[in-house]
Amino acid sequence: MFDGFVDAVHDGVVAGWAVNLSRPEQSVPLEVRVGPKIVASGWSGELRPDVANTGYPSSHTGFSIPLPAGISDGF
Image 1 (tube, one colour):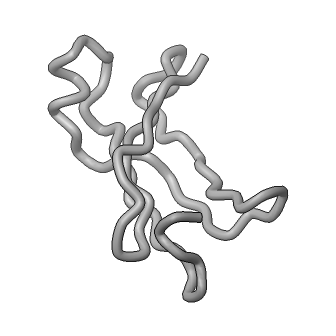
Image 2 (spheres, helix red, strand yellow):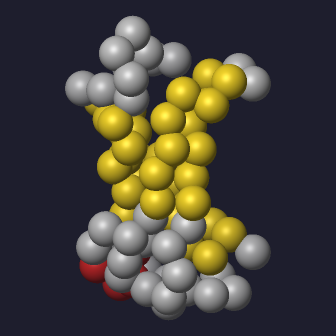
């Protein structure tokens, strides 16, 4: 089971956190889609102590995924 949240889409970057609750030590593969098309991908794993402080089992849950040129912040 997974949980996560997109905190912001700003300046060409999608940022947030994601955690695999069954294996919290593992990074989560992520895809950014516009409609059915995958426009970017990345992994969780950035330090997010604020997420761990709310009771999630890992602090390495953050992600920042750069968007390709031409994808607006409000996609």
